[in-house]
Image (cartoon, rainbow, N blue to C red; front, side, top):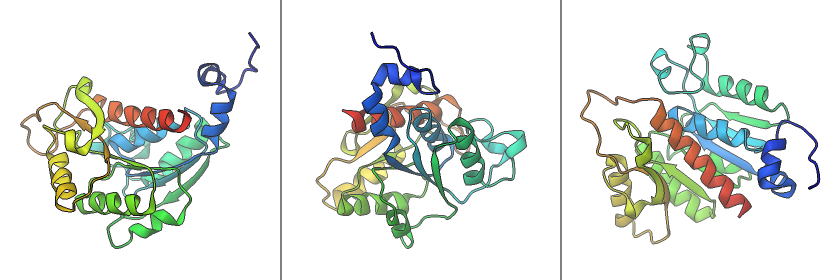
Length: 229
């Protein structure tokens, strides 16, 4: 077997092949929302050879993020999330091209996301109206996308899966989006990350690290497979 020159992605090259690694390096992924789910999407994509990333978020790192967000540390509290994650990405792969959009995305300004030539869009935001608008906009523009549903109030990562929105259950956010898709008579498949676990009864949006982290890794895995298959 031909030996592979050792480099930071040599183990990945052994698994996926040099040609696939080159394909991945040339793709551009946009991630909207870089919190519990989105942060791990980005982390997984960058460590999987994606070298063009657009990260979108206007929030700062808060102490309450530490229990679940990969960018949240005592040393990053109070800093802009996009700045913290950009620095982390560059520390993983200095060749990765990172565009940051420090804005709160709403249906009114959603068009700024599509000023870039993107191969995949990941919706990991919390804003319901924005999630709805993204579905319509991505379908209209024929942009491939996947949307993360609810991971709060969940404790079992084995209940996570990627499926069409119409097949979701036990997911309060997915229920809202499912109704929207039905009401708007959208017939195309809408890929979402969802949990089939019954939500825990908690005060507020109780959360743990291993569910959103697993969700982010699943989304990244799904995108990588879609790109190279």
